[in-house]
Image (cartoon, rainbow, N blue to C red):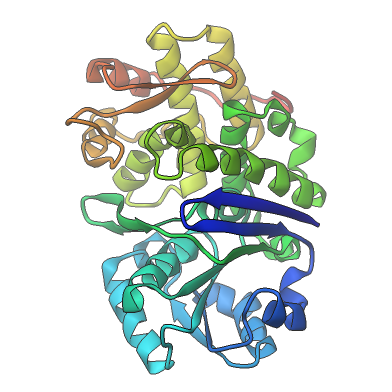
Length: 357
């Protein structure tokens, strides 16, 4: 078991990483305050796998569901959730337990922080990606037609409960999606996270704990994303645009994988890092089974989609780039012509057959 405290504005909360945690009904009631009125908010798939059982395990819980997939992460969904929470009888003393992947954590987190001007929120991520990224740091958000995560809040959950046993039901594609964020944390601050041996499912508790610690360290230094917390967006300026241009046919993790490659190539094109570092990034991404080419997505369209990125400053797109491994810088003066060249250069890149990085 690992208990990682996260200190920030408004107090401290714990992130727990423990096999079997969600099966401990009495402990969920007493230690984590889930003995009162609770709405277990999840997607339809996770409801079948874990949600119904968890709701039955709690003494006064109602199951509330939303559609699966990125398309459900919308203000339309949130409006329906408000009605569902009213119907479930949730008042200001109630708790919303967000159970699921990144879509569920973001959407139910946003609903919890805006319903009745905010009710108690507990996160219980069920995917590797949500454990190492979406559920940590108190950011929530939904998409609008113009872009991804353009509406959201900063919110402090009461706790984040990571039961590594639920990862046993995770499809291989979703596991790879999570590894994309693990690699990102490795490039940012912890080179050991790049070790493919750590990426095996049997190492899930230690993998999650190590990756979460990287994000916690950055969030505590910069809770409202004024400077170093923005490093966590490495590859994401590209990734969000790739998701949007592909009409979300690309999963978030796949887009992050390609985005990490693009960030490495752009860093080299800007004269910040060596070609050896870009090669290592590509080897790591390809070794994890993630894409390192764009498969025909139009570079100009991707750049146009970046124009609505929430991280832009004074009309400029801000990129998180690398000078070296674990040496990060924020750059907002990269010519878009250079970005287009980098993306066009990724159209025909072969997937490398490497087992390590």
